Length: 234
Image 1 (cartoon, rainbow, N blue to C red):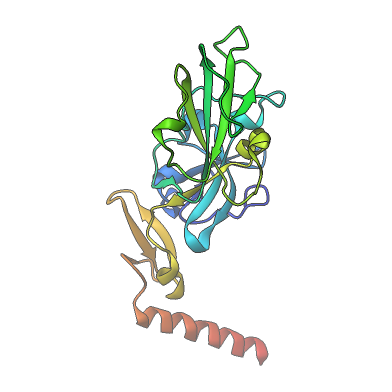
Image 2: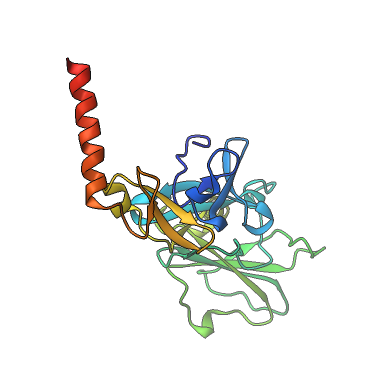
């Protein structure tokens, strides 16, 4: 556990779990009860929710979470780091247009943002628009503007004028890892072999297998459990 979040394969907590308990690039450092992704950009991302049943998780930027005030324009596209995951297509997308020059007022689909970017000393015209996905028409891109984009959760129902809250809610990532289900069903423990860079199922007799433990080990585990219960009952 880290905070109120259960951390297990494919993640592992440094100093709490052996490194073979999860993928090398999914190492977690539990800081102030927050599960921080060690390999994320400047260690600035942490897990908010993990959905082990469908291999996905919600990540939040601590830099963004600690942003002062209700106005923030990201000056670069999201870069969480390298790992066995990708940004889910379920997310919506916030498209930011800032430091715009000689721009005619766009349609009402674009929210006017009055705050500055870190590099700007003047409140140049800036806008943000919310898209249902990462697909937009070339005509949607405002000319003479610097552009950046951020994925945001698609199920919160927040409108574009709550773009700060949308970003602070984080976004969904899908894990590209071997499923643990068959290994768990065979009474094995899921892990990751750092030498072969491959999934391994750790069995009760100390052996490892590529998918699950052999049936005879599952039967032995059941017999041991059954005998233990019988002794307790007697």
